[in-house]
Image (cartoon, rainbow, N blue to C red; front, side, top):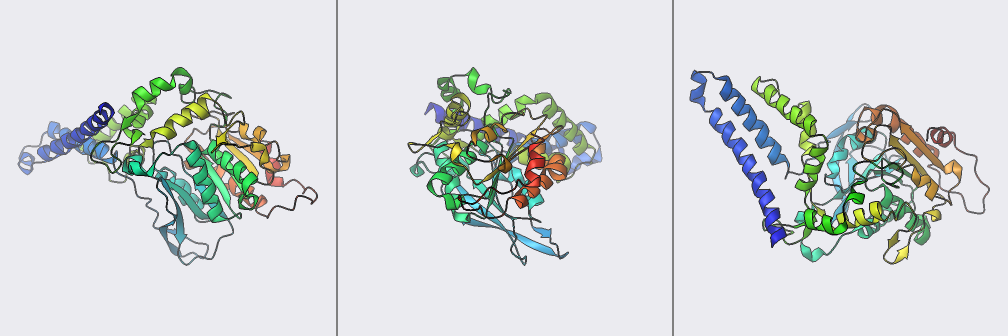
Length: 433
């Protein structure tokens, strides 16, 4: 009950702040006050508007907001989000583009389960849609999953990825962003051993902690500073009575959000102070830069406790992926079993979450993969967000990823065939690693 009471207390504080913002906005916007304009009332209304929106967004799953794209024919094509595979802890969704011919590139974008919804990759999806048939892993908020559905840890996550890859077939190109990179690598290796025909053609790992010890950051080194007992005692709570997942142990999204904000507290405080000023002066809009960013940033989801704890214990503390000792359902997964899937890593030179060196470590683990199927790229001036959603992604990284996909789209040759000539795109990208 203690953990449940704490969860409900956090929700009560969030709800109270949302109510205070709404009350301040309503009171300061009372029409009679317009007879005697008062800057203090304008500021109060602005504070209320920003506060209400901020705390309300924390429990709202954002929409994808991708209604249409312009095709090569110059026409606008309607985009609908369809569920291809429905599972308890996450779905495989497809962005269906109406009236468009089948695309040669079929991409599975593996979204993180790290506190934010898959919609965090909205701009990534939008940038890929004109050139690819896009599928995304859409993870569910743990607070909405009944306890009867059982546990969900990193082994279950890996099996989900394997099932999704099997569903989509081998003419697939997988892109894993941040947290899922190690588990996507493991899922590919496990498929290479159990079901080789279901392997994707390429695997692109973007800013993921394959080897957190390669270049530790404050984020990846967190697991070294605390014990598992301390984590379980301070971070894990039971879902409160308002949610379908009542009683489920989770790592609350509100706690994760607090840790995100604390990393750059002064910058966030200044951003909200500036936004209040813009609202008071009538210079803001529902979709201005501040609201577009924070509507997504503030929307957080709870993670299953077993997933969070097993990630810290086995990926960051135990280094099971980095040392090729990862086990799924009692079976040791060997990254060296990957022999046909072209693997590429992408890192940002200014990434303060998964620093350069952590992700490229995947290539050394793929001992069964020839050098002509390995590639890496370092974007010198990009931070963590920029390597998959910012200007660096759009202008530099995305074109290179598409080139890598095209260079390795052909079905793998039988094992007895002679080695193929190294692809130019792979050689060029590997030189940047």
